[in-house]
Length: 461
Picture 1 (spheres, rainbow, N blue to C red):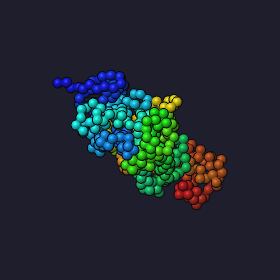
Picture 2: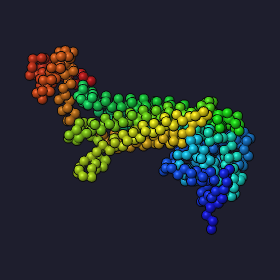
Picture 3: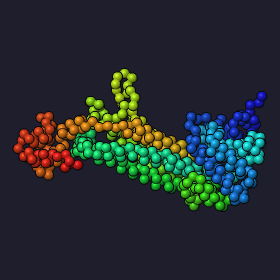
Picture 4: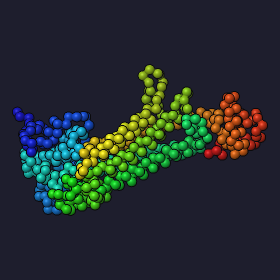
């Protein structure tokens, strides 16, 4: 029994397995680009199918596409989008042509063959639904791939990233409130500084996350401008003049985002500046998360030979050789996520530089890295909040001891004794292994009432 069929494209004949829904151009790409294990993320594929569905509806309404053929493409699209069928029919490597043409044709061929199958036709016949003439009508890889990049990024930010940021903000806010009255010693340069409350310390983390969220949200809005309708270079050749408007209306209603058809198609096709902006906002979030997770890791170091002010949940054994060891694994996970996002940003920025004349030539690697950054940031923050922040505790005794012993309490004496005298007291305390209070009580600097007044921690915060 023959387990393959012969499909044709402009290059010639090629064997395609009878069990798959793709066609000749996808098969050639599989053979020519066996580069990595990285495939187009499924959220991008679904966004591209969503775009094809919208184009079929728009072309039908504009009288450009036969109603039966359009309906067959729409149903094929919904088999993927709403029934989650055929999701394994998109095997292509990220490292392919820089325009993403092979993946655009992969989607075109799969939708064509699904439609043919649903209509009782012969797979690979391109009849009655042709992948180029019908599924790709009024479109080019050059405008559809950028459009789907925008759709996938916006949806991933709205559905995953923003909710994950909000969860972490809420988790930190709960701890800020819980620890709001606990005064501890501050640290600058990893050396003792003046006191603050844990609540104040955590408020800084929350403010950073709020700023990062605002940055991402504002950048996301630029992606509402879609390239669809520009076709090959931005002029819109072979597309109905109202295709872009219609498609944006259809997508806006279905997805719930106000997509804009009025953006400059030449810019949207030829450059990827908007993704440099988006990737930069993701990098900023990553750096924020690296600071937060690293701070908490330091503050929880120990439990006896470190700072030991915070106590992280015990999620799993920390060592294969040291019994009873617990490590800050969630913190280390999030730091690694941040490092990967920073690396992805470099790839995106480099990719955007490959915008020559009328086309950017690094779109697959740009969207792959953008979507990976959004995914790992979202999942990383969710895990960190659940497995580290929610169970976080404080070691009040340790905090109190470190606070009392800090030499930087001498800062509170400066307005009363002057900088030089306060520095002298700090040096004496350090040399004699005493606290600032003990030096003051043994010397003749201040009376007891003033000592209690000036070294009142509440007055220092």
